[in-house]
Image (tube, rainbow, N blue to C red; front, side, top):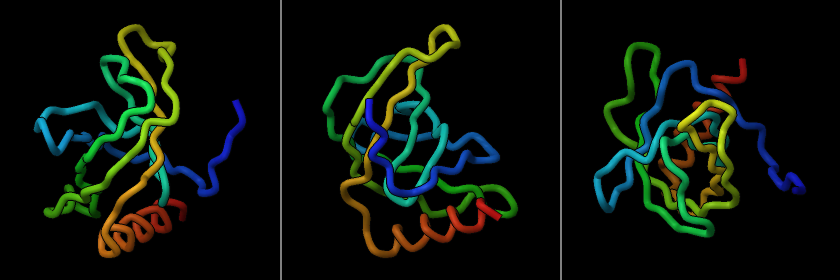
Amino acid sequence: MEDTRTAKRMPPARIIDVVDSISGRSLGHIGNLSADGMLLISPRALPANTLYQVSFKLPAKTGFSTRAIEIGVHEQWGEAASAPGQFWTGFRIIDISPEDQERLNEWVSITRT
C-alpha cells in the first residue's frame, strides 16, 4: 500500500479517547495524529470506506482541553493489530472548522518539539 500522507503524525503522550458524535459511543483511542489524519486503535474492526463525525479532547499542559475538537473523518484502511483484540484504522480528516484546525496544528507543532 502506498503511503500518501503529507503531514508527520505525532503520538500523544496520553490516551485520547475518540467518540462517535452521532452515537455518543467511544470508537477507540488515538495512536497518532496529524493536521490531516489519525490512526485509531479500537477494540473492533470498523467498516471500510466509512465516514464518521468524531470528537476528542487534546491533552493540555495540565489535564485535557475543556473543549473537544469535532472533525469529519474518512476511513482509508484498517487491519488487525499485533495485540489480540486491537484493530488499527487510518483516517483522513475531511471536515474541520478553522478554529479546530488551528488548535490541532498548534498541538502537532508543540508535540514535535
